[in-house]
Length: 484
Image 1 (tube, rainbow, N blue to C red):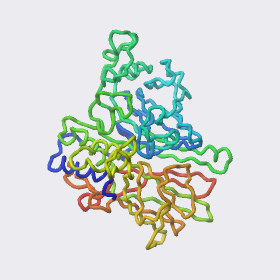
Image 2: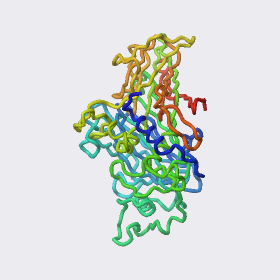
Image 3: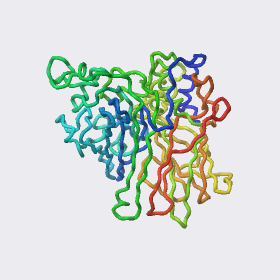
Image 4: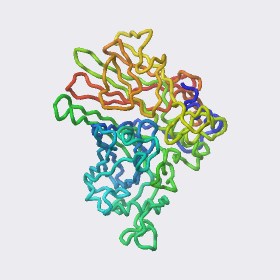
């Protein structure tokens, strides 16, 4: 790992803050294998001439749930859009992310829903029934995002959903304004509507103080999925071009109702709001982001590939570091970490000469080994672009192509390198424990977790023109020298 990488900051801060503390009664944040949680990470969206269909479902039959959805571009995780959704019991909300190949145009988000209130309202008329195919443009430097974000950057990245609170009865929140008023009353949203000039959260037909009979911390009741379509492949019948995956759920992330919500860029809630005040191990922002990092830590990642010439197949790998940006933001001013990574104009980088300019990227060294189907592995493996002995991942979303001379399956500007495989079929191992610094103390189990907080996907197809797949990468986790 690059010694200036974000994990160095995170690790020493964790050791400084957490070693020696004993777990309290609260449960730790976990990546829930059951697929349901109070927060979701959609690992990848692509709108570079592609279409991405996102869905979120509230599985509770007893409680509605208000959530924050945030879209982040893939290079440095700068926010490019955020808003709130008020899901009633058993409700679903869905949307499309679409864009063209013109670098001057941002991606657009299209509502694919006509009954779930979102705040702000995309059409501004307080009527969710009118929102089917309503659209908003994702933000870039000229429209409110960080200086480093171009219109083209908005077309590729990932999304996150964090619960705010659960409520009953869900049918009480029927309009976008009511959604905003409920958020404002229960979580101090500064932009909540004030239509009467009296009670700031009462609009004449809805008063959250009386119309919501029960409000609690967000329920672990969310699941989601995404599908990426290649419309050109569909139109020309050259390929089915559909790649789908389930959103990654976190369980016990937001144990209390986060306060001080805002629609400003990088506004609450964020991962550092995963706090339980009753738990001394998770009662500051740094410890909160550490808890999420622990939940996402993995020691090794494994991918399959099949690029047989006779089949004209293709295989790609995507690695995502969804907490890197926020980890650096919270730790850059903490003790000995102040001179390492920083964020300048939205770019995660290192200012080596302290002149206020980015001098180099913050990168992670990820040793990668490729195998064929007969246990063979080459003594040397080529990586392109660049001739680094260990491949580096310098973005928050990193796209890798498997195969010499192969092109990415999806249009991408986040290509990290091509893994130049001498084999046509086999598997790949990505090692996340190559440095001694790649470990974090887990106070709930009283041991070290070895690795990096990362998510991963593999996508591919066997035969050009046949259906493709998009699967989560398999992984291992080592704790204090043992395999969990």
